[in-house]
Structures are given as C-alpha cells and as structure tokens.
Image: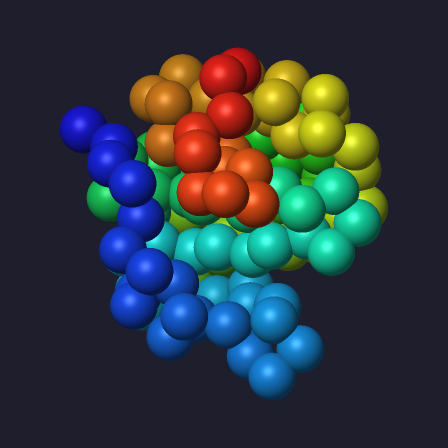
Length: 107
Ligand code: SF4
C-alpha cells in the first residue's frame, strides 16, 4: 500500500540543492522538480526492479544496481506527461507524483 510520503523522511533525503542522490538505504526516494514542480516518489518497498520506469524515462529514473530498486534520478529532464507514463508503466504502482501542494497527481 502506498501512502502520502512523510515530510520528515523526504526532507532528510534532499541535499542542499534540493536534489537527492541516486542511491541510499531509505525506503523512499524523492525529488522535487523546480521546472514543473512535481515531486516524484518511488516506494522502494514495492519496487521489484522491472525497470519499466527506466524504459519510459531513462533520464528521470535509474536502477540502483546494489539495492536492485529504482531511484529518482532527474525528473525535470522530462515533462510531466512522461513522468505520468513512467508511473503508469510500473507494474506494482510503486511510483507516485505529487504537486507543489502535496496532492497526489492522478496518473
Ligand atoms: S517500473 Fe516500478 S517496479 Fe519497475 S523499477 Fe520502476 S518503480 Fe521499480
């Protein structure tokens, strides 16, 4: 089950530039795009590393080879529709998109 990400967890993931490194042990990864304002969250507990998201948006997602889960790479490198398509392609619904107000964006 996927829920609204906990802000404290997300804040702990972001670096000084607001972007997150592409690997880590946290159960979630997130990154807010300054261009289109969409926050992308991958639920690492759900991800089964099929890489459909990478296939749709290879510059936005990558597979962490050590942990074998998807991580958010550079979501602003693609438009919102491509992020939605990548999220829809996930067979386990591990990807969620949130707008600047924190509301989940329908896929
Ligand atoms: S498509 Fe879903 S399950 Fe596959 S790597 Fe991406 S997030 Fe993980």
